[in-house]
Picture (cartoon, rainbow, N blue to C red):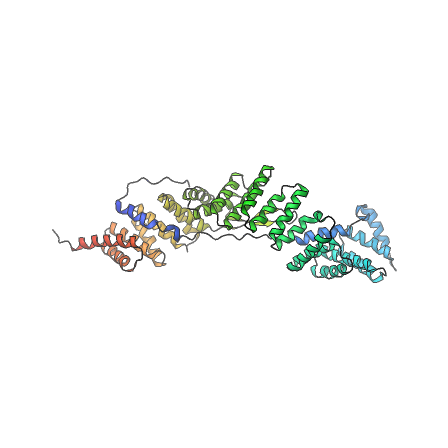
Length: 477
């Protein structure tokens, strides 16, 4: 469907006046939008905790670098029947960890704990090892138990950060933040694990702190990709101008995910109710060849409609409706974080097709491109039979096109559903009048005069009613 120019066909003065009167209330009556909630969903904190735990388990480990045969030989030696020394058990643990056999590593470590007679620091290290092993098994309850014991004896910065990840996976956010703060206070180089740390603040909703940490990380790493993460945090604390600056700086540094950045900015501007900037951001994402443009077309239409930019609504709405009618994806965009990298990415949810068609049709009515409006509104009614407002608007278009029988059918549906009854009665009255049904027209106009609230409709219905009654009372010649 292409955006049509204004229909230049000659209309009667009554029809033109009727179209203007019926269309003027359209904007306030259409359901404008369902604003998308934008929330960071970090689902990979267990994985991040596991990475830190694995780093601790294999620290200084020669077995991790040995060949498979050497590891197997050492493991076989360590598991000879009979009493094993702690050294032999340690060998078995190292090999089990290197082979990701965490159940065996846990069993052997518990044997070491039973035989251990050293100081508290050694006990603490063994407890932390068990905690890390349970993290690798994704067993949060046991991991927390052993980490608590280990930190009591040996409170290392890394242990605090691993426990923070475990607590976060259990939705114990306040306790998780306490461990993060302990890590920041005790780690000699906290920036080494800062990406993992920042994710904890993001999940906890501490976006201002996360943004400031991303600033440090950007300065330390020089990685422009983190500009997008900082922009995301800033959109969540309504620092949209600063977020836009991050996007522009990312673009200047030859960032490769500009379309993704503009979708994110668009969602942020929408949340601020700045639909002009939001629509511009979404339109840029389309121009930048965003991977799934249909999801963004919908948001351009939405923002343009709220911003009363009907030309843009029709331009993008017509294209998207054509795509949907051809069976293409019907999705809208929202945000998550990738599990392995922590980078921002867009995911999709089902769009409201009926509201898309309704907004597009309503905009065509505003631009007086009635034939195109009928196409969009018909698509709306096919998508959702419950959008009766589309019947009212389509009835108005049919009236303007002098397709009176179809207009009356749509007005009947609208009246029966209690949707725009006053205007539908008026429009149906005009149709009846044009088709010679004077009695029906009088009935509708009388209803408008007696029950209506709109002064313009009251005046117009009154004039037409007087005309009809005068004609009925005029003596026959």
